[in-house]
Image (cartoon, rainbow, N blue to C red):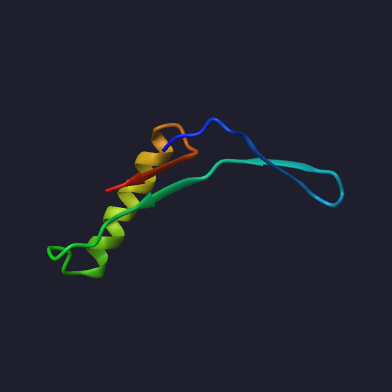
Length: 60
């Protein structure tokens, strides 16, 4: 999933804030015995999303 939509928020004082969102997700299966393994997979997915241009969701 990739979007070129620019996300902008205006504060009460009129300051415009622009940001991107990168999300890393994973699917837990029987071979993921340790919580650390699950976190590492999600973290890897997050960095793939960031490196592929941001504003992206990557699922491993």
